[in-house]
Image 1 (tube, rainbow, N blue to C red):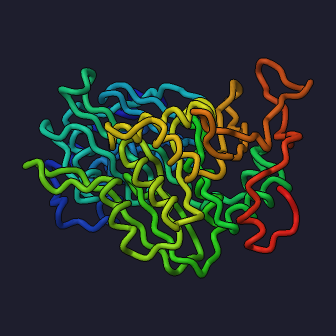
Image 2: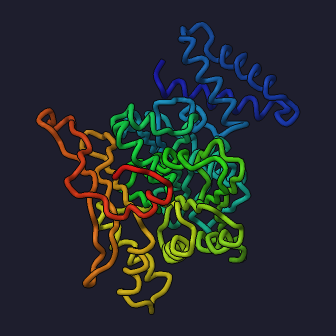
Image 3: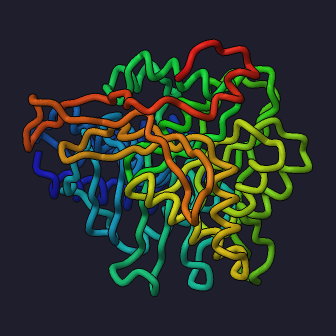
Length: 412
């Protein structure tokens, strides 16, 4: 059945239900049953595959009780990201590749209704006065909303789907991002309370990697997680506190930033602080927390390389403390961070760990780095497919003090 005919039937059935049935009094099961009957009536004698029939009933139901077209997209486990650029233009990321869907929302008003429903679930507001919001779906999927007049092509809704199963190091090994030997080394570094920062570009898998690393944290510790929209899946830790930022209300009051949460977390007796992502002035507070006895902290940030990440951290700290000398900032970074793990999304859409680097300290105006592992392509690599692995460099690890404290006998 052609998509346009399917959409027409869905619209007609929805209109009939809203015009002729007491929707507020119907249970979910009754609404679904009525949708199925009416779809059958509209089809008449026309042949329709069972799959299309189920899809249409689901679309009718979700457009009334759920998130409309988004519900049917979210049920496809192979889709990892949804990008709605106005009600007529919907793109998805499937198996690492972007493609345009041949479906659309009925109108801009319908899309706006869905957005308001999503944002309202987490107690947030989005309107012309506050047109940009980060939130999440009930299943934990990350959501970003941008409304007109900021957006020139209508309401923008971007959804990063939430994995139903927490990411583990074993899965990263299975996907070829790490080897078992390197994973064991990272586990040792986490348990020894090295401060680890994960860098990478958009879609490189930073949060996924952070999730996997966080599950190496000993179960008896007290962990504070701080995020814009909660998406970390740390399992097995009982003493876990999850904090989430809040946007200002329509009066411009009530905003709670990552910076506020980091400051507050220091009064909660944390053993480790996990910051989902640093983007601005909160980088200074995170570094200070790492420098004041909260070893073993984890965080992520956007950058194109390990060196670039250090430059971005300097810029972010300056946003939080303009008058701080650059030398002082670099000393803060060098003394706070122990290990930087850089991830990348390569030309064949695969996500790889590109570098694991030790931060040695600050000397002669620059931060000293000691690459421990570097990704190298092999002879099997082509333009379409990347082949290679992380290789240990000849550089010995130098900051072994924390390893010795934990009784780890070998060098990394």
